Image (cartoon, rainbow, N blue to C red; front, top):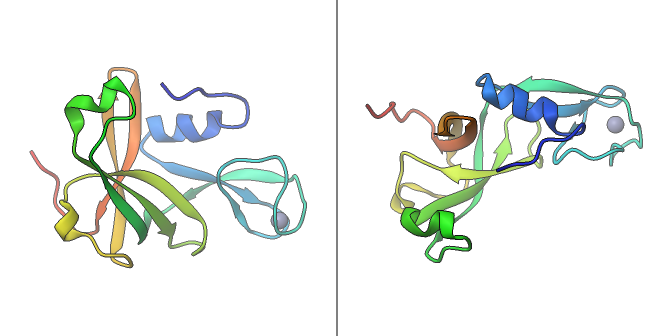
Length: 136
Ligand SMILES: [Zn+2]
């Protein structure tokens, strides 16, 4: 289970409500992800969570064929990727990829976030190619 602490609680609280919030520097506007104490552009520590659109482009992806943990054994193979967010290309969010096969994926295609409950107490953000309709 992801461990939430004072630096990441805003993120998990937003995900539980179906939003993707990233820290944003209030002095220069740069997004900060993963959360860290100081802006890597201007050295400010003045951050606030900012809700992003959940849209971006696929920067990289991989099909996982080997389970790194017993939890994943029955999920093989599965897809993971890194998404360049529309709000600031270069700020990248790693996530599982759903509603697609590896043949649907190319670097640079538009992607959108979708939230899936993986347990009664945990919802995670995933990404899928933009425009895919929800499966029943
Ligand atoms: Zn800054």
